[in-house]
Image 1 (cartoon, rainbow, N blue to C red):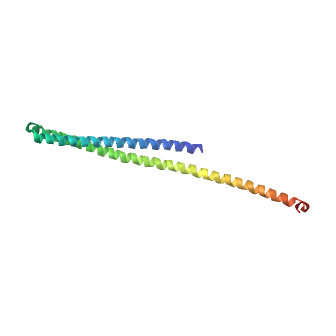
Image 2: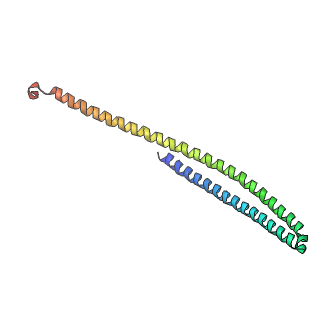
Length: 145
């Protein structure tokens, strides 16, 4: 079943591609989360500096506002990436189902072919047994005793 073998190879390739996309998106999500954590750390550090230095405290409010805006933008980006991950995972699942469908077709075809071969072999063995039985029946009784 060359056609099915080709379809299986195609869907394995598609499945691998879709899995790579999910991995890439997961890496992107992790990078965004690292940036968010870095912003949080920077904000905390700036807060400490502002509490220890009167002059630095004047710019802290502006810094905090800018930091929170960047954090909010990253949050939006992260949510978008999470949605893309979900969609990509659905594509992985669909490709997996399609691959399994063709693998089952091939498996069923191979099973039927094995059964046909077993039936042919059994028929040959039955024929050989019958032929031997007939030959023994046709032999004169004088040779059997």
